[in-house]
View 1 (cartoon, helix red, strand yellow):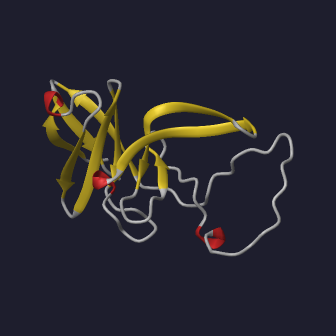
View 2 (cartoon, rainbow, N blue to C red):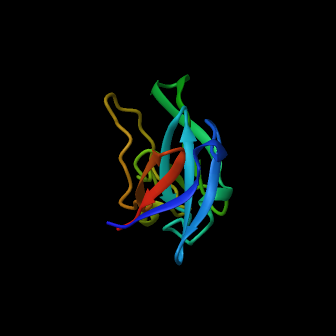
Length: 138
C-alpha cells in the first residue's frame, strides 16, 4: 500500500487536527492525547467537511437524570448536520433511515444499549516516521 508523507509530527500537537491532501483525497488527521488518527474529510451523509466539525465526547445515561461524559475530544460532529463519528474507528452512531420527524411511543427499559449506525467514515493508517507524519492509503 502506498505511503505518503503529509506533515511534520510537530505540526499536529495533541488536541489539534490538520487537513492534508493526498492526490484527489482530502484527509483530516487528529492528534488525540498523542495518538494520531486519519479520516476522510468527507462526511458519508452529505459530504460535509469533517475537518471543520466540532470535537466532543460521548454522553451516556444508565438511568433517567444520570449522565456520564466520557471520551472527550474523540467524537467529531459534521458541521452540516451534526452527524457524529468516532475519530478512533470512523463509526457513526447515526442511521439515516430513522432520522425523520415523527411521533413515537417512548418507554424506558433496563439494559438498552446504543446501536451503531451502518455508515462508516473512511479511515487511513497513520504513523510518525523520522518526525514526519505518514498516511497509508488503500
